[in-house]
Length: 496
Image (cartoon, rainbow, N blue to C red; front, side, top):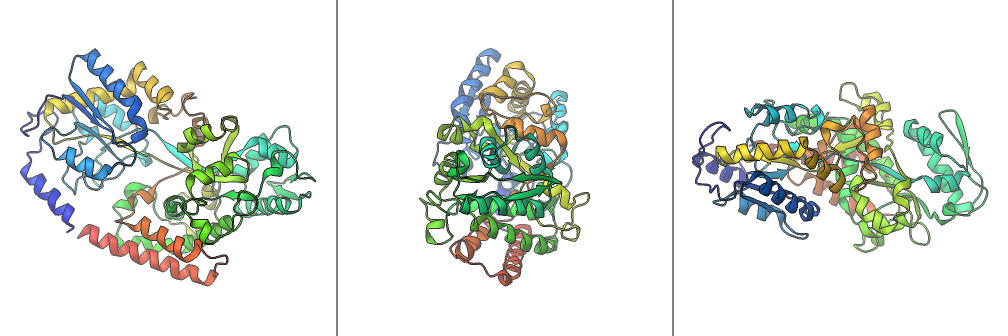
């Protein structure tokens, strides 16, 4: 058993775990009757006044804390959770550290004894739940985020001389992998020679303009890549083949050690996509070639890549709705012209182990995940738990709470997906809601990766591939075997 698990187990034994309706006996102070600990730093500035406003209107003492940018969130969380006055609400996105097997700090919201809270918990879509193997429902989603290939409609208009790209976007969102690859090849040829190149999508023909003018003339590559940011090609790219193995976070988290063996075929095929994308990357004045500069902390950074996309250097940018504030600063005119295309994969049905998922599912859907959950600390007093529950009900049910979530925070409210949630705080929400309403969604099993597996994958890709101009296809199988073996090793440690 890992050291942290041993510590948490001891803490659990020494703490009297009480249900929501019982009298709390932990030596926790009720001075801050509602203590909200938020780990999503960018939310802190607007969350604090909201919690204080709630405290004044409900005549209860409150406290809210958000670690600043650059803070060691893990260390601060550990300190606060083990203090004499721990938060009654804290935030996390995983079941480790504070979950049922690591101290049992999370209250099961669906069996809390408070009908309004149980209703909120039961409204969470199955694949978005922070759920245990026994069915416990432990968190309320902050928001829902999704990612794919972002594209500027005006660049498409310029590239194909179209006044309206509605049909083109519809075809890009639904075409299969090979048609999308043919499309990117046509775009790549135009970038290099400025000539007209025709391509078919869903039996519709589109032809690039016969000149390098307008926004299309600014393109230097098909894709915008952040070679220095491992999370862009480890966490989020590896999540696609993981979706061929696991239906969602909980299935991956509670999976048997050997279940990951099914990752080999989809992981090898995802390498083809990763190689192609990074080989067709946009640079400032020309292609951004793989090599030392590709993974440099300056020329390969998130900020640098975002500016390249804002300057119309790359047609597609694999990113998610979270970039809205940064992109709005870089190019405020672009922000309302964006759309999102699924990350196409050359999977066949034999590559996919998840029931009801098909190659079409992957080529028409985008991954969604919850970046953080509100969790009620079951180690606080019963009174504090009740106040925490009432705050969450107010946050998601009252007009003031919803106004905060949608308009001020720019969140998508999970139980209002079928409603109009157009938000001035994040215009990209409308794109995600179209996919959500259509049920075109994949999940987030990557968040359930054991130990430092994602970092291991990222380091392997960065060191052995991103710095090399040419990739050896014959090494893909060995790469897949290595990351599978590492998952199994870490999974064994996690369960011991």
